[in-house]
Amino acid sequence: MSLALSSHHLFIKDIAGIHVLDLSSISRLLGLLNIHVEPALRIHHHRIFHLLKARILSHSAIHTKFAMAYALAGTQRIHTRYPTRAELIKVAWTWDETARLYSITYAFVGTIAARLWDRTDDNELDEMEILVTPETLANEGAILSNIQIRNPTIFVKEVETDRMFITVDGQRVIPMTFIATNTESYPSQLIPPVETQFRRPCHGTLPANVRFMALDYVRPEYRRCIPYVNFRDLLRQRLLRFVPNVEDEQVQTRNRHDIQDIIIFLRGSAVDQDNAFPVGVACVLHPTIRLWLDFASENFVPPTAEMFAEFNRLIGAPG
Image (tube, rainbow, N blue to C red; front, top):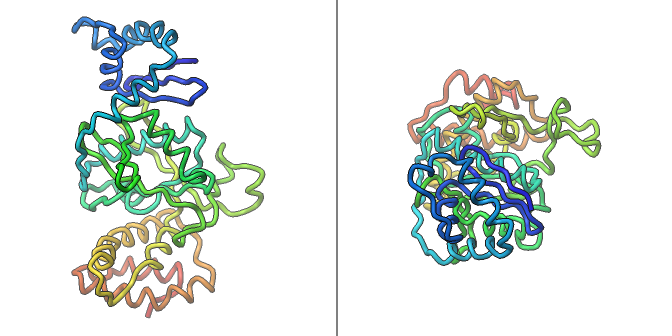
């Protein structure tokens, strides 16, 4: 077993996996282990770490005990639909840290990718969409279940739906949706840029479809780059799932929600200078774009010259 400490998390690694505890969890862990800490000492995280180290190393069952204590707590969770940018950065950093610890290949997609890039607090966030390899979801998502069990204060699972949530703070959470590559109109695999450490021989000469954006965290130790699928492919996915003239209220709501995503993906694609779509893809998207432009106008989002220019660059004038 090994332990490590950052400014806000304690990392415990043993044969069962890696357990990530935030400061609130550490405080409860102290109670479970019957370790008394004077109030004046509680702000000195490294001194608490040394107190914990000897006790944890001699307590082989503490991980199970600690996880069960939280699983049985039954705390009500509140889905926050308008997290601030600082909160988005926090949860993005938390997931990226977890993915690195568990060697999960992923990229952010959907609204969270749009909001993180656009630096806006205006767009509602229904869920945190994450594209992963099929291996991550194998065996009924065993890897993700283990992550949640080992980190019960950071990740919460809803018993009725088996859905996973990430904690923003206290009782406020954001739903997480894990999507396998080559499904729901997403790319068949995640291919990082040649110049990054994530590029592997198996990627060969395939063009990259993953980019990285910097998290502008206020604390220097939390600053890092996180992966997202290039905006051209995210634009394609949102356009392909657009359903015009539908009566289903849930689909109507999704269509309206996707308007801002599509606008941001268009802008991001222009900034990143993503390559144009292949001719076959462009032919498929052409009629959808015409219908989508009408739909956006009907919802008080008239197309701009910039939008037309980027559509024209990527797939030809929608006409």
